[in-house]
Image (cartoon, rainbow, N blue to C red; front, side, top):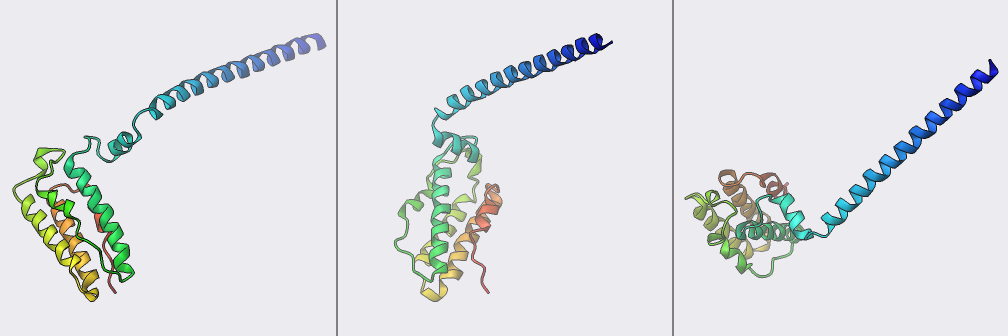
Amino acid sequence: MVLKQMVLLSKNKFFVITLLLSGTVLLTRCNSNKESETKETSTTDTATCSSKKINPNGDSELALLMRKMIQSSASLKELVKQGKLPDKFPEEFLKIHTAKPTDSDTKKASFDGFATNYLDNLNTFYHSPKEELTKNYNAVINSCVSCHSEHCPGPIKAIKKLSITQY
């Protein structure tokens, strides 16, 4: 009887050890595959990867320009909150009328009107007296929201976060 129990116990130990070794081999193989995939992915252009997350259709002139507009607006927001006047009007934003969109259907007939409104509000903001900075900054942001409401609604939530709450 004792001999039978010892045989069963040794068989169970053998089974457990075999199972653990098999599991270890499988995990090692899976991890080495993931590492090689990671190495291949990391060799690709990082900028391309991050921009594809933002815009899976690629980076058009208009998309790149609007990203600069958002970055500029975020910087301007901080200036306004500090009560500082902005420096120089960003001339490159005048390209909004001619920049090629990712999808040609994005620019409807009303796009140029919205673009002109944005540039007018931006110009007014850059020439604002200190006491009107917040109001005129928010007018710029609202012109972005208005345009995106009709043309490309995806970034509206991010754009609205650029507004400055007035008390």
